Image (tube, rainbow, N blue to C red; front, side):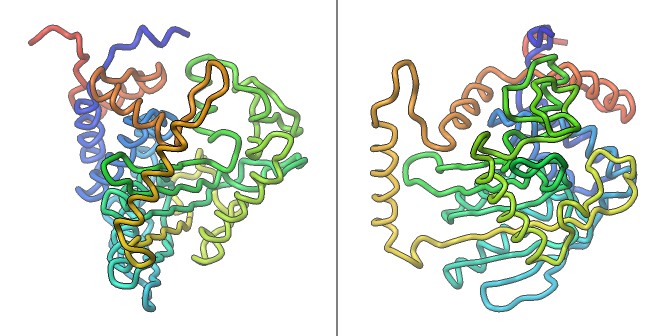
Length: 360
């Protein structure tokens, strides 16, 4: 399938359309703003599986009742640098941004802030919330579990979710160091993206109904844990995210969470998540911290690569893609383009204007 047939759109136009559709679907201003911000993080940084292609799904769950269109988030309990946030079945992005704001406030006071999130929902790209902390000068860490779709190492049934882990670290004079990884070999939304594009999956990332590896996105019934032949490491990391997200929050374990794709879009999924913020100055003076990060990255980027390859720090690819897309815009995959057209008609919202469209 030729993706080049789709027009290029500015990020600003995509953001405007996404926000307007969420508002038209009945989401309140905070929900619309947070969900749009998280999706645009994915699209801006090239994490398209967690970008604006999620918009039709979010509209569906808002209208179905799974996600509260106007939630009342509140701190359920607080003890020193630790707090729990009851999200009232809010959109996961609103809950995660609010929780990270609380975590950084606590870290500013205590040096560390840990917030467990209860009664939340799918939040998209975990990196968005860690980066939010880093942009405020803190180290940010984010965990979330999700419904079972990943087999265990040598397993033949779904067990963990894709269970992302994200860490962001501020870097003086440079973009933050940014890790955002699923503990599965790939996120399932990437499988959906490959289906839309008609592409074969890489080897050792997905399995059929019997746990046998497949590169056919349409035959995928479960994902493999990160690590291929060493997938026990990915499965263990998924367990780390599971414990922080579900056990510490009292929310559902992956195998107890209703499937993201339905068919029930009315019942809240009772998901959990966890965010952590660290204030560098609580551990070492800021100048020493900044110098350490700068020297680390200088040496990393300057290390000798293999022939024909580049050595990059976590986040380097994403920041490069962001610069490219801010300058040249972005193309939607065919399925998302069709969904945008349907949403524009349903809610009478103006579609994003293509970059090369003639002036009206």
